[in-house]
Length: 499
Image 1 (cartoon, rainbow, N blue to C red):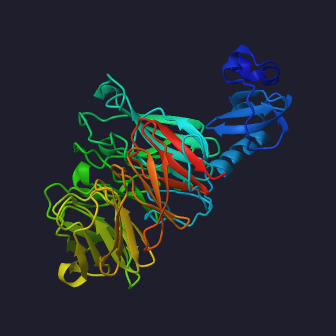
Image 2 (cartoon, rainbow, N blue to C red):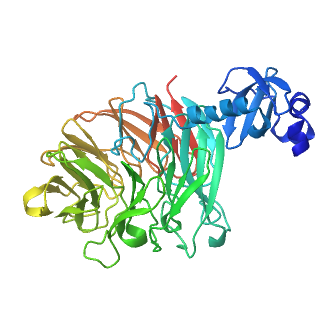
Image 3 (cartoon, one colour):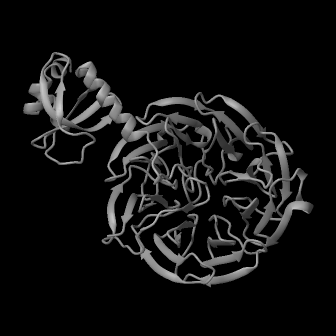
């Protein structure tokens, strides 16, 4: 190894045996222009940097040949240049980011335009990447990267064998440009785990990303922070319980905190320090009156009319609000919904809208800003029209969603809950993915890979039905990356772009 690094120029020119595995004739878009690189012994080569991964750099010569070598093999000046590429390419936010579950505001809304309207397996697919494992988490976009979770080793759809001892959860980094997997960090499961997870498996929580770190929630196995090179920075334990439905809530970033809905693991909400992973506050708890019970949704930070910020989480029977900085309880509201709560809430103009349940009351609206039990004073309406899995979107005084199993798309008046339309989406099957609002359209993705595209207005208008069926299951919510859509199945990640 030392001899090969020392002979950098010879290795670059001849693609020596040591470097044959990484030398190719493929052409890829690089991060830098062609320039002179000097190794630690003063020898020079003309090349450009294609990719920086941790302490390794992949260079490309002018003839297209590529080779990978340690950054430490170069002069100090070149090392500074190469590590600077890592910061500029991997950790700089852009307007097209989708940095957390349901996007920048956590409500499934994007201001993107020129998104694709129609596609199939052969049309408007910019790229398609086979994934190393299954999962139901949303693709998360930050800068030129996509971050995604998956699991392998046990209970993988379409695969036989495996054992809980082999179960691993993965954090993947992919290049947004072409879908290439840049790195894959595997985390062994903390045992004992559930022997089976219904419907969505062991990787349903999406990550959250900022300029410094990627935050990952792997249920009982814990909460992790990684840097953009895939190096683990810290790990926190938020509880040891498991459930046959698994975990699904995603991290929420608020100021210097990472907020975790650990309803499954400890019936708690937990706030962790972003930098260290140290626990800052915790509310709820097993068998406590304020336990965060049967809540598979991702919490939402909303702003009341007074300007007060409130962390809202719907649970079985009750919606709770807390001060997101301190965890201090603010208010609670009865739902009259007789089921667990899976859909994530949305909010607008100081009002929170929640869906849930399979029968009876299935939706409600609550005005934020109250204190104590606000059921009688701040609950605005309830409705029997809702959804047990998929989350809604809000636009111009209306709520839109697709029911998870009835093949029905809804539009209701947000102020009253009155139904504007209730239209069937024929032969659609189930909807587990949450609604996406972008480019004046509503995107509803089925578990079978069909995407129903409707006009985002209170008159029903179906614009397109697209099909990406690949013999796997599409449980993950779609994401937006600039003018592209990202859709993930158990087997593949698709990037869709209008031609």
